Image 1 (cartoon, rainbow, N blue to C red):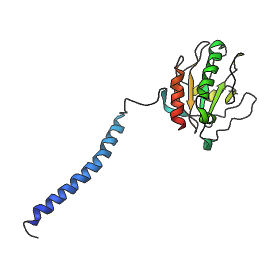
Image 2 (spheres, rainbow, N blue to C red; image 1 turned 135 degrees about the horizontal axis):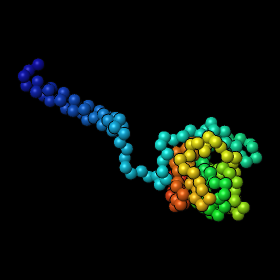
Image 3 (tube, rainbow, N blue to C red; image 1 turned 120 degrees about the vertical axis):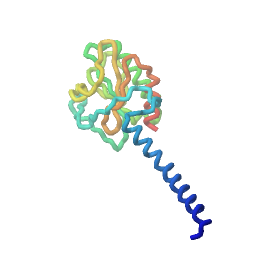
Image 4 (cartoon, helix red, strand yellow; image 1 turned 60 degrees about the vertical axis):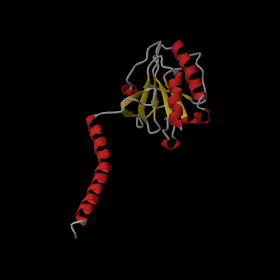
Length: 186
C-alpha cells in the first residue's frame, strides 16, 4: 500500500465509523431516555391514562341476569365502563343520554363499543342496543381510581384485551370521549 492510499483509506474508515455511530446513537439516546423515565409531554388522548393499565380480562364480569360477559378479543371491542353510586338518579340518567350520543356518533364503528353499566339503571335512563347492565364486580371496583357519588359519575375505558386504560373524571366533556373512541376505533 502506498503512502497516498493510506489517508484515503483512513478517511473512508472514519466516515464508516461516523455513519455507524450516528445510526446507533439514536438507540442509545432512546434507551437513556427510557431508563430515566422521561415521556413526551404532549399526547393525543383527551382522557387520563391509567398507569399502569390494570388487567380485568379474568375478572369474570356478569350481566345483570347472571350470564357471563365474554371478552371476545378477536372482535376488537372497546368497553366504556360506568360504575354509578346506588343513589345516582338524575346524574346517571343524564350519563346514559350522554353515552348514547357518544355511541351513536361512532357511526359504523359503534358496534365495536360496548357500554357496561355496573349497577341499576335509573328509571328514566335512555337505553340502547349496546348498553349492558352488569352485576357489580369486586375486581373492577378494586381497580378503579375514583368512586362515584349521587351527582358525579366517572367513566372508564377498557381496551379489547381487557385492560383498564383510561378514565374520564366526573363532569368530563363528552366530546373528549367521542374523539378518543374515534381514534381508537380506526
